[in-house]
Amino acid sequence: MNKNTSTLAIVVAYLLIYIVWGSTYFFIHIALQGFQPFLLGAIRFTIAGLLLLLWCSKTREPIWNRQLIKTSAITGILLLFIDMGLVMKAQQYLHSSLIAIMASSTAIWILMLDKKMWKVNFRNWNTVLGVFIGFIGVVLLFGEQLFLSLHAAEGNHKIIGMCLLILGTIAWASGSIYSKYSSLPKKVTFASAAWQMIIAGLMFWVAAFSNGDVQELAIQTVPNTSWLAIIYLIVFGSILAFTSYIWLLKVRPATEVSTHAYINPLVAVFLGSTFANEHITTTQLSGLFIILGGVMLINLVKSKKTKRVKEIC
Image (cartoon, rainbow, N blue to C red; front, side, top):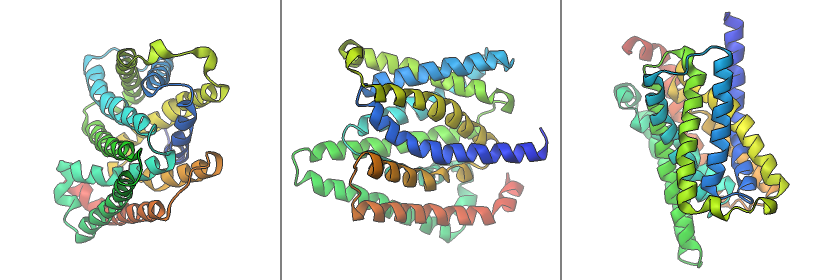
């Protein structure tokens, strides 16, 4: 692959995780109108994983490797089963825009949990300030939902949703870091993503049957929009965007890749407010820009330290 092609591939991959992932929150909202969360995850990731595995076999990318499957299983459980499962459950209590706003704190969790980079990341006080600012935004959003819980009958559900989101962002950050430092060669990037989806899909099937999601499904009542949404999630959200994310983690710094958190909530807020009539409060917008301000401060520091990081590593 020449330099120009490589640069183009990186740009396209970033566009996919920036724009497409921002839209998935809205399409999950649409899909959940016809499917329960665990069943949605089972269908989405099983089909996407099998299609991607078929593609790998056609391109002769190695797929039957014990270390590959083991590493992919851990990453898939963290990134897809735990995080996406919690996100879909939370979306039963919270609107998609708020979920995307909370998810923007993922970059901060990556910084906090990436122990190997602590000496580099926390050498600059601006980084510490960025983390502090970001958490202020999270606390602000959590505080709003706590206030609502004290004044509305369904408020407890909102707090449950917020807690699920926080756990989900931690799981996603952990999976991203684990994937970054895994010893898998770059040539199995797509096979790794395929196994992650398949294993997560199997976990979702177990959860769906255990929770009664499959038994309660009435296919004839599923609206066409939910079918279209799940197709979009499979093709664009999983196969294209997720594989781009996994690939970028191999070729670019994890903190840089996490900058998709800047754009995703903006796309989600636009789609949610425009097409789903979601009401975005002043507090939520404030929380969004506070979190993004913290993340931006962190990444500005990181960009200035790129050469130093390479020397230390």
